[in-house]
Amino acid sequence: MKFDAEAKNVDRMIQMNFESARITHPRCRLVVLSDPTTPFDLKKITPSLEGPPVEVFRAENLDKKEEMISRMRARIQFLKEEKGDHHIVLLDTDMLVVKSMAHVFRMDFDVAATWRHDIEMPINGGILFTRKDTIGKAVAFFEEMHSMTMQLGKGLKRWFGTSDQTALSAIMTPEFGYKGPPPGTPEGKAKLQVSKPLFTKFVPMGERHDSPIRTALLSCPEFNGAAERSSDRMPAKNCNKINCCCGAESRILHFKGGLKEHMFSYWEEACADPGAYGGAPLLQAKCHALKHPSVSSVDDLVARTGSVSRPAGTKVALTDMQRREKAVLEFEERSAKFGRESFFSKVAKAGGGKQHKTNKKPTKEHAKG
Image (cartoon, one colour):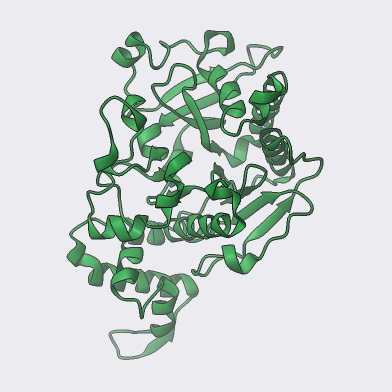
């Protein structure tokens, strides 16, 4: 049986995914996309930190035998019902958010994805971004991806990870508006730096050229870094081959394929050896919790620091966010011995809350915002 076919493993991955998102984006919404009947125990997937309650969006007309088609239909239905109040990140279940993504939405795009030096599948569908002010363009984009996928052979539609990425690869082809060198080719490797974003205009079939979908192609190592141990990376294969290994610049770690089981042990390994995963950023709150089990979460500490002394000696009650910030500062002070810069307090103070989504099973997805 596949590791992520067991509900208990998937629930735990969702909870870890949501927990990391809530730490780095304290005000974010967390939304699960699913079919009308799949049961959810929200207690098992809810993060320990305070914030908006986890939501479940039930999409209609889904087919459990066609996981990828159902996932796209759920995304389209969700986007059509959104009011444009939040930016959205579609995120696979097997990912951890280790740095803020707020700055992405200062870029000019309708839809954003990550690219890599892979000739056949240069776009990985594990993470996709849509702006709150261009939801209509995002819907048009996903409807085109759905249409293109429906034209694929039956095997490709059902093979998880292939169908949508086959359609997504069209973003970087001349037929759909891309004008740069092909990624993964000698010319592409010579001219395209995977550390920098690319910008193109995706033109759906049959659409007028004056209404393209502005597409940002973000760095794969930064926003979709394969969470392979540094000791496991072979020069001629795996993430090295397509220039998509996680490292110090990573904001998202992707435990895809056979790496999924490592998601459960990541914090123990990385906190004990910060170089174990290419020096990927650590969430100091998680490392601190491992060192100090009696204070297992930020909210545990917040509960102990409900007021703050003013210079005049008076005390005032703190708002939830103020208590969170005070707790973060205490975590920072106690975690300084790790010798690594923490991004936790910066994000908490900035209040960078966006909307996101991830995937529970091939037929389910989650949104974080």
